[in-house]
Amino acid sequence: MGAPFDTGTWNGVTDAIYNASGTEALWLFVSIILCVFALWMGHRHEGDSYDRAENNK
Image (cartoon, rainbow, N blue to C red; front, side, top):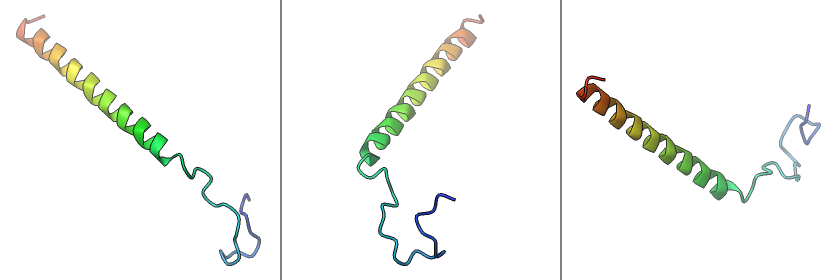
């Protein structure tokens, strides 16, 4: 089922196993950007919530 070999072992496998080679940096930066965005949105939300609680709104 989608395996590049028929013997049941990795012996003799010569085809590419990891097809995303070379795009690791792209996905690293995407994940960093998403984490920073989530932290920024959380910080903004907490600030707004704190201000509303201080003003009793």
